[in-house]
Length: 193
Length: 161
Image (cartoon, rainbow over the protein chains, first blue to last red):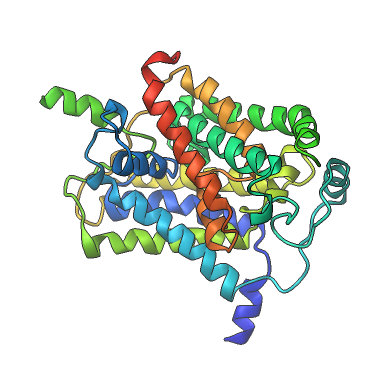
């Protein structure tokens, strides 16, 4: 048993993780005729908490409870993996990325997330405004405008051979490249990195 | 009224529910379990890592491309198998995959999401897994993602689509 835990505690390679994620598609279809997608949960949260009479949020969200249960599961899964299956070894990042991010002002490369950004102490600073408020807003606004995120479009949509999802995925990537290569540097220096 | 309801349903999100019966209580547990397994994969393959997303957009590692690419290939094969053999859901229904219509939003919204993805280092799925992993401040990111969704809903009829 301990050997097994040690074995699964190593970081999983892409050829293990990718197929497992892909299998979520038929699993959800077969256990309940559900189409895989995560950003919908954000819409359901609006429909439940602040529908405000907006037609876009006025629908039978009770029928979509499964989606909220799914994301609750993702949160619990994150907890289990971190508490019980954590990788004891150092986090490995490509040297080039490390160099690039060091140039942007990141100093901590010890974990999955840089403590230069993802801590409570940055929340009420300009850094928090960029990474949590602005970034979060773009993610929520953009996914809904696009009608889905990486799961709904890139994985579910392309898996079912729907070309609009391929278009969406291409623009997800273009947006990411533009932010990473053109905007992130200036934005980070603006907020004090 | 019936027609209106149908239109609203057709518009509902990227993850519509095609099952006829509304599931409640215990029937929902299976989705929590699938979610848990999914969340574990997210953490163990380090997909929740802000660093991995930076590596991806800087083309300095194949990892994320391998994950997304092999997930899509697995999905394509699975759906083809379901279709070819007419596999039914566990409650005996025919599997239904709603068609996605092309809209300008997939271009404009997709681009905006991409900008956000490179800042937060997370698409919506990993946001939940990051919170579960103990990066509690990401809850704020989630709140603003919900706010962004709400603002889209509020102004959706005034945006090009």
